[in-house]
Amino acid sequence: MSLRISRISPDDSDQLAALCKAGGDTLRLKIMRALASDSFGVLELAQIFATGQSGISHHLKVLTQAGLLATRREGNAIFYRRALPQSDSLGGTLHAALLEEVDQLQLPEDVQSRISAVHAQRSAASEDFFARMAGSFQARQDLIAGLPQYRDSVLALLDALNLGTSATALEVGPGDGSFLPELARRFAHVVALDNSPAMLELAHKRCEQEGLGNVELKLADALHDDCPPADCVVLNMVLHHLAAPGEAMKQLARLVKTGGSLLITELCSHNQSWAREACGDLWLGFEQDDLAHWADAAGLTPGESLYIGLKNGFQIQARHFSRPATDNRLTLR
Ligand SMILES: C[S@@+](CC[C@H](N)C(=O)[O-])C[C@H]1O[C@@H](n2cnc3c(N)ncnc32)[C@H](O)[C@@H]1O
Image 1 (tube, protein in one colour):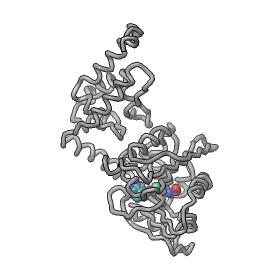
Image 2 (cartoon, protein in one colour):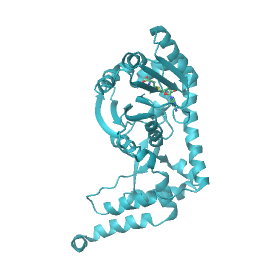
Image 3 (tube, protein in one colour):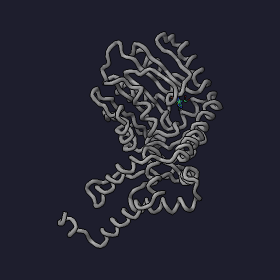
């Protein structure tokens, strides 16, 4: 310990002091807590904490300069998320300990209900998009990436799982149902959940056309409605339409049977903000580390990943996460 202190330079002390100072404020600690598995824009945080935009901006600046928050441009808005502690750099241990303590805090009820209100606004925007745009769904998907571009990668991950003949699958957000024939061929029983009646109708037509007798379609919200767990849960291009993807991962993990798998195909982080309007995207893709971090917090273990670069500059990540047979974190958290 004394060795380490003797190596701290004046600049280092400034950095450490900034970290301590950033953590020494009630509102800033609450902001850190609210960002535990979510990211919010300045206006959303101002709404959540019922504080003026300039006041919130000041606190965000202090937290960011201290290395406790990281920013990400989402179109015209800047979103804030927690930075991961760097265990091998100065302040890393303190940063990690601070997060651990912050996560024990309970946010006041009014703050929690305003977070729910922000999530509800995001979800409503997404549902409204699919209700209005089901007719032009395929054309809009093709603007960024259509199933033909990621089908083989998802199938490669799926086929590597070597699931038994009685295994079941759950597809969340099947859209027009294009992936359902592949699942129907590989699983004894397939349930497909979509919260958009218009999209479910497209999936229904696809199942009829293809004569998929082992596929059950349900109008349901995968995050809020009851659904029996499956051996393999698949989400293709759905996570970026969910209001709180980090929290969603915890709900999705509960839909995976013990020893089962979660397959997620997603866009990598990008800056094409037109995708919000044209494709109803709430998030402009995700960092690979974000998915791994959320999966870990949900008690899932990262497996194989495949990355697909597209000619239009987008990149897709196909990720496998498993729910370990002996993991008890899901029940403890
Ligand atoms: C971009 S589409 C992806 C469709 C398809 N998986 C594909 O790869 O082409 C997203 C789908 O997720 C559905 N969805 C969004 N949020 C959902 C939720 N909370 N529960 C169930 N379905 C949801 C939408 O209605 C839509 O059908």
